[in-house]
Image: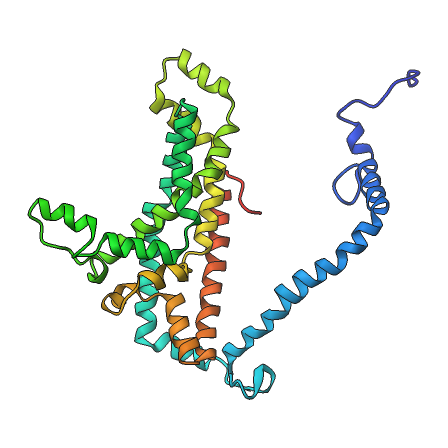
Length: 330
């Protein structure tokens, strides 16, 4: 039979007729190239910015990593310093201090992940359930404020509040007959203080992403669950958490990517010699040995090891998340 007059390809056959090498239709590829040609001068202006940002500020400085394999001296520079191979890595892995700082870094990161990661999720769910707009905005503002305070100020507040002589915490405990506790110089209490202060400063700000994810959930799902007799707890478990599961997965991958990279400011402000056995971590060790003692090659080897571990962690976490059916970073 002949082809009927005026017949058109169906919706299923039309896209496949012109598939191009980029996986889309030929018409879509033509439009893409036409748009590039139309904005060609803007793209030309963007090329120097692209080369400057990625070339000069991202890839060119990576040559400095070679000092981990050299006996770097300021007088000789990076190019003139002698190659020593993996000498600094051998020294690093044989050092008793390396095991100590690695243990402290991993433990504090595990504490942060276990106790700190769920808090913004819980706060976002609680804030989302608030119906009084004024109260909701007031609570959000109070939770966001610590994020904008520097760690120097936050550390000073924490030290004063926990002071055994003038701190409000010990003043309250003394009313119940409890002896003053030296929170900042006690190796057992210091990790608790570190995690608590970290949550206090960052948890409120972290709720912003989760609140945005919750706002994208279809309200009709909640309405249907109410008709079915579901309470707030069941709505949270069966609707809210599954609705923000992909966001939780992405942020978990990013957190695992920096698993052995604690923030220098927080540690440095709260750290003191009395708790160095539990508070000395990779960033502070690099500062103390690398900059103050000028052992640049040795700490560069440590920094390269830290970066490689972070890369392995983020790739592994992304693969696990994708195997669980969620969208990863790539």
